Image 1: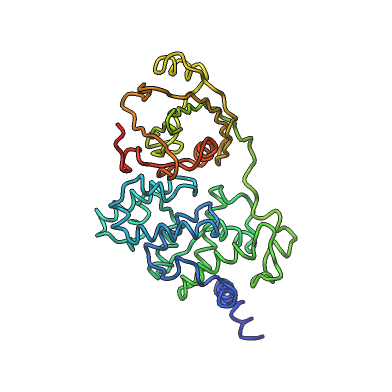
Image 2: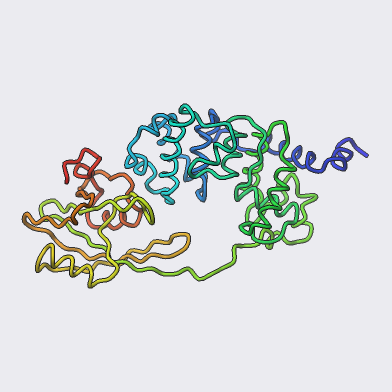
Length: 371
């Protein structure tokens, strides 16, 4: 029996880690932006950006974010509008709001540093067990396991763990395997290797011939890579409808925006005034603008994780000195040539369709003189 075979028989977890690390040294990704250097702050930002978002998409956003917010202190001191502006297009905007809140907590409670204590990390907004493990291992060099989506797929197939990873019993089983196989040495490299293996080899349609642990992979050997891990149980995605009001100034074609409430869909972002029904919009227009023509525009659709949204835009051209703004609302005018921070993607598409890129000169908090 060879030395490798003896090691594998004595400690299967260590043998698994050895093979994964050998593969990583030859084929893994070593030049990702957040690896150069892999500081706790840079790892934290990248981990949040990478949640439900591909590496190729995140690269540019990460570089721009780092240029503007190179450390915890600069992020904590920023206005949330600027943070959302740099996040615009990445989606899942709660991630950006949580980053901002967590940075302020780090300044207030941890001396402006990303904490090394797991409990302290987990207490911060937007940081769960796997994200904390990534920060502690990749950023602080500590021995902690991770379990992101890619790692779940690798471990579920190799260990033959059936079921949807979102179910609590399946997740507990995966964490047990992850903890058992994470080595005490080169933990950061191993965790990065597992993420790379899931992203590059153990795909939904895996490239098993390129996998360093294929020989003893349960799913491969049983011909069940299409079944493991199980897909999320399907349910019909509900359709929601909303009516949005596009008020355009007659002199320059600027569009009126108002800030959405801090929580909920697009919380804290700039958007069009919305109404639940056509009659509600018409009553608001009649009360604020009088007898004006309301022009229907083509619907705009956007798919979220849990539902589809169809926006029915209705345009009104504003002439004269009428002030249509709701009392107490944050509002501003969306003008050509530049973009306001944190504009939802479907609203941006609609506004661009109506006449060029936006400009923020009249948006509150962004060189604004609006009310």
